[in-house]
Image (cartoon, rainbow, N blue to C red; front, top):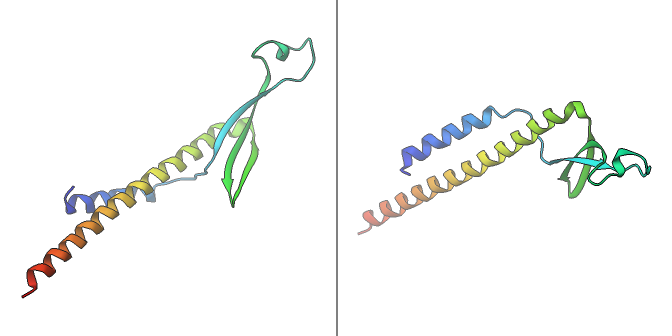
Length: 117
C-alpha cells in the first residue's frame, strides 16, 4: 500500500476504535451436570442438567472463572465479541503503523543518500 492509503487506513482504524463498546476477554462455557439420581433424565447418555454458564479469563497472572446468569449470556457474548473486534483492530493498527514507519525510514535513508557529496 502507498503511504497515503496507509494513512487513510490508520485514520479509519482509529475511528473504528473510538466506536468500541463494552468489552471483556474470556470464553463463555455452557456446562451440564449429572445429579447422580438413577431415575433422573440426566442419567441417560448425553443427558444433564443445565446449562449453567461460566466465563473463564486469564487476568492478573491467574485464570479466573465466574458464573454468568442465564439472563446475561447474550450480553456477555456481545462483550466477548467486542473484545475480539478490539484486538483485531489493534493488530491491524500496529501492522499499518509498522508499514508507515518503514516507509518513513526508507524515505529518510533515500533523502540522506541523495544529499551526500
